[in-house]
Length: 181
Ligand SMILES: [Fe+2]
Ligand SMILES: [Fe+2]
Image (cartoon, rainbow, N blue to C red; front, side, top):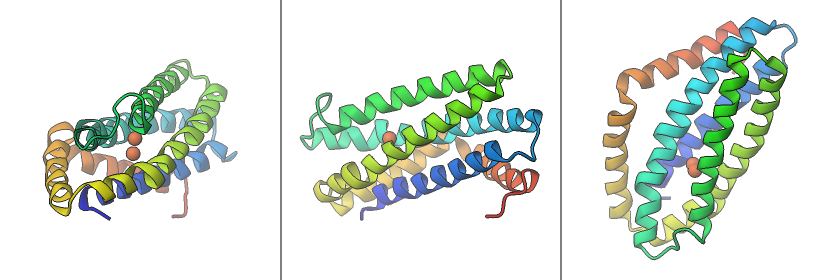
């Protein structure tokens, strides 16, 4: 496993554990509508900042272009599929945001369910197909350099303060929504 793909795999783990929290919160009948809508709002914030801006940003800005330079097809191959799925994911989060704005909990729950299926599939494709290809064709030095660029990128687009804020938000969810993790 390379250093850069390893970083992305760990981020996949974080995304999956937040999804589990989301599924716990929305299916828990002890919580009333308002706390669930509040959670929905914060979950959308996590998806926009961490999943999309930070994680998809690293893939789109660093990993995929490097793989394309190595000769992987751009639009008509698996990377093209991943890029299209990122766009689909963004649209799904946009729709999710509308349901929160309209305080439509039923549709929010539906959207979270659909997004979970979608992102789990996407992550599985990357873990099982894209990252192993990157591990095969990128040298250890290239992965090392990419991992350094990830750190710079992360600091630029998310920043240490926001990262800490996201961690604190997740910790608060565990208490507020009584989740045992
Ligand atoms: Fe992706
Ligand atoms: Fe990913």
